[in-house]
Image (tube, rainbow, N blue to C red; front, side):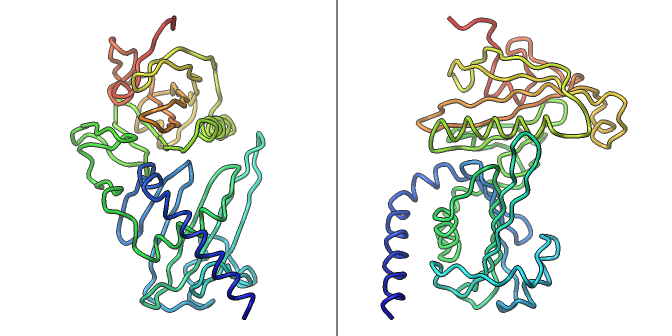
Length: 302
């Protein structure tokens, strides 16, 4: 009994502390809902949640967990700091350049006695306190509607600023917008500069490690990002000679990619922007239309 009381007090303490920063979390949180599955991005962490209309059991979990590579022997652990019945699975997958894909799976019984599956995926970091607290937000249905963006894009919320895009763009993921002929932009909002900088570096390493092309060149350039003068890493990525669907659809052969982290409206943004060599470039910004909404090139910063 004493142990249960200690666990409960610790849980309530964590919930209280997290509750004090909910507004800050929600200001960074991006979300999309599609066909019963919710997708989130915050601090560079990608989160997915879905509810299965079945009770929580190993049998029901394994029915939908094959795509995660989860086996029955993986379902031997629960998280004692989550009060609802649950199973917890943690996996890590080392990659090149010191990148490790960290993934956590929570299978939890919600208030309707249904099975909720929640996945956290991130690069080179893991925060169990945050994961538990976010699971509780989902179970309590505490995520505000304001963080969700429409599947049909006419505008995006870019780190607190609304940007009108018309109907020519679509989502490639949460905080990941593509406008054919006008570029692609993927961003995440972070609580501090170090986190944003590490996220950009990790995403650069992931692209550099890809096997479907090669980096032709890379340099550091001066840019103005959301009104802030910063330095950005620029690479040219070559697809020449490849027959991938991506190359056939775009008609291009090389991608120009920019990696930026910058302070934006009292928070920090990591952003990866790219465009094909045959996209139309705005001469005033040196970039195609989508990228021009947030950044312009600057030959020299005084």
